[in-house]
Image (cartoon, rainbow, N blue to C red; front, side, top):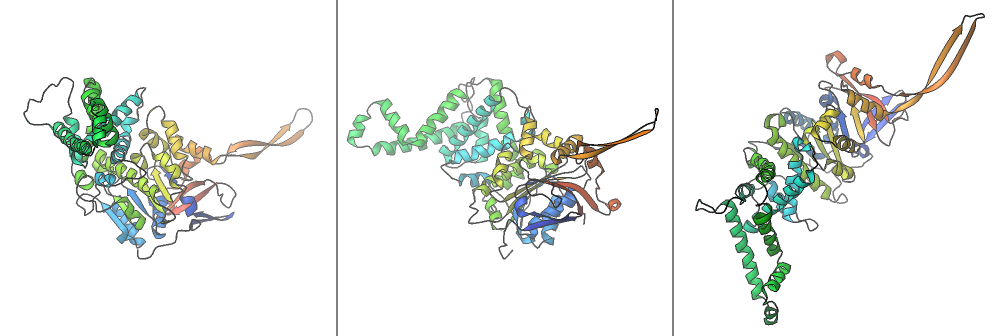
Length: 500
């Protein structure tokens, strides 16, 4: 695109007409987030999903597209072709020309005093925790979470002290060769990866201490003759020295003395994730070389598509997309909207595959950052299954509560239909009764009362049109919006989308 489009929040994206009049759905409502529910074959991707994508692109929005299925790349290429945005599409895929080195990127982000280690730890722990199997919460969750945080922080700190950079291979090798409780010496005669990193880190820190000592005045030297006083001064003056002491204590005492079972669980959750990132084609795309694309490209009008469909690349494809998604979310929230007011979108079909623990928290502030999260999924149980554990009900409710606009297409899932019916709400209806008595004299009476009934019954969703030749390629759905009502004065409407 050669020109920068206008991003007035009151710009109309959709107009709906019915017997009550015309209703509008604007960018302002879109940035309050969108989710779509529809059973397999209900037409959610080919109707509502397609219409939303084309509107976003035609109005100059940019953003991130996550891929669950192999056909999504071709789908978005066609969307971009139709809206003259093909030159703005950046595809990260095996064999492609683009890559994103997340360690290089995170190492360059120092905002608000956040260290390199903290940046990388937060990204890695978020992706690891997003694994659906980690959703089975237990009473000792806090222990495992803290233990994993400590391992992540200390191994990254050690590599950073040793080499000045953090490489994925180093992280994996250091964890794999960290000293064990029963291990007394290294019998191979060759330093392990942990020993090499530890020695290099010590050498770098000792060099700093020597420079510190040389810079002391005679009076200060005299004052710091005592070993304990000198160490205290060094730790106060040199952050790396304090960090080295912390790393030493962790690996020599805390981690080394863990029971074999406990240690293996902590190691496996981290090293198993790193192992997936070290495999090709993931490693070349996200872990080495210089990045050819960064999240900030979206602020200049680009659409980034991650063509690592989960159905093909499984956990590795999912991990990489969750990783990029989380980094992208943080980057987009950092931008100054007063300087760059471009509307952004995060689009995910089969969205339940790409959830992470901070989604609801991110959603709560995405509106002010002008980001339209657009999640498509078949039903509520999909979200529950991927946000598992005892608290899954509240996690799902917390997430769904952040979506201001919801589309409900044909569905046979009773949980989703009940949720949609209750969300739409109830209204009082007139109930007329007529009674006739033939005993003795003939008498007749009529009465009227009011009763509260659901405006859309749960079973009605199963009968909505699902497109295709049988329905003249029309897809029906109920659209629910918070705040601004439709022409009927209600916050929901039955609308139709065309499959083209």
